[in-house]
Image (cartoon, rainbow, N blue to C red):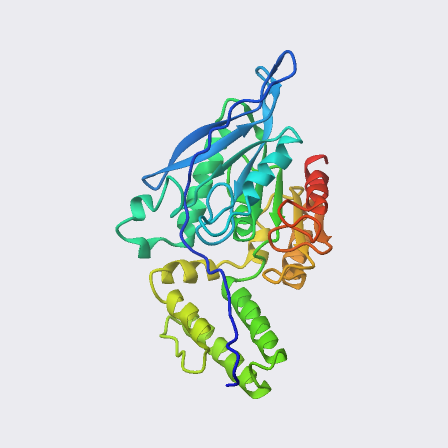
Length: 348
């Protein structure tokens, strides 16, 4: 291979859990209860899970619309961060945006993060699979449903990336059914198909920069396809023709996270869409600057939602928005187009 080592990056799905943030109540208008955060604790599969319930300013005794916030892949905590290196505050910013709409929110630390940690899986993390994360999210939904400030018949599911897929899975099975789903930059195809697309895009870029020859590109792409086939057939992956960083990724997929990878990849989001109750309002966003979830990957899910008679607003394309829902003018906060899309769901 030519000089100039190509960099291949993929944030592989990983283990996650719940944490706690307590904010001082803000001043409220006369006769209103001020906005406040409080720690919420619930149990999932024998693990104590910790989260933050945010309640907007409201009248005493009022039952509010409420949303469960679901984080993306990896060790992403209740605020949408992977400390210490990565802190975009994605879920914390969604909390603020939904507060403006008078919507209470519950966000929590997935397994492997924050105060929850691995919980019951501490001594055998290899048993942690994707259904365990779904069960944890289901327990969170039930906790949100039972809070004294929330209206159990006006619940929303708001998920980012992998969390959007989890929200879609929950949307067709929880009781009471949610009135709406926000699928923000969603994992809309099978996990390993998305990994393949991401890796091949990075290989193509390395070729464009002269770090690989076209022949080497074809060899690496074929090796990626073979590796994914091996994973799906539960066979060892041959990493001989893979660059070191891609080889390390597939080796990790066969290690402690193997069960998670196989079980996540078994979920095909368009197939899940048909379990939604007809008329459920669904927002699906995709950003034109999102290399992790290109808009084209949401086509099949968009069509499936239409055939399932999901309600509006449907898919909303966000110009110049990246995977973290930022745009060039708003590199550290949710882009205005994201906030507008959310309002199209919540103000319907």
